Length: 216
Ligand SMILES: [Zn+2]
Image (cartoon, rainbow, N blue to C red; front, side):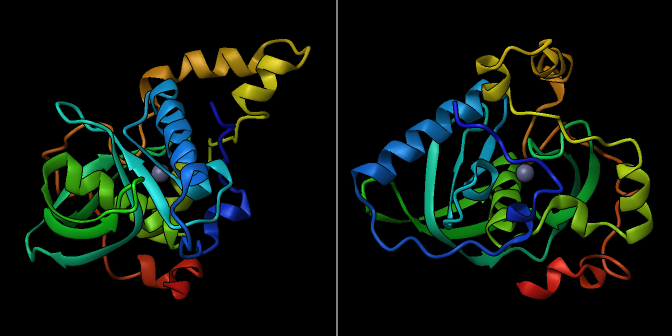
């Protein structure tokens, strides 16, 4: 397990760099990331979320196998969009409906260094876009209006320490407690399908108004 990086850590709002070499070390990193994602009960995890400012992420959605995306590029997106409720391992306990294209095509390299092209829809398309945003320093809350973002974050408190640190330290176990308390919510990229599209927010005052969004 690799300790997670939590909002408002600035690594989450920094654009990650291209991976230059896909070697055994990088492959080992992706395995650790998959392990961490599983341990945190997430379905996606991006490099910056574990403090690696490299353009890579891992994804594992139900009824699928773990997938690794290195230097990904979303080369096509459907005009059809939909709202789903998203959450993020780096912002535990915070959820919001986010509109995104329903189908995408992504090109990337896998951990063996082989290029591939993937057409994705459903939850896979959703989580790939969420993770891809992480590589550009964009969080799902950045896709909300400022008002809604502030309201959502009002009760948010970043975990005081990572689970790994709590495991190693002589603490009161707060880290464990919190992890357990939120175990059912610690889903990256997706929490549950929402049929309510009226509450989603996009455009006016959305990403464009965020300073982070200016980077991408
Ligand atoms: Zn996330």
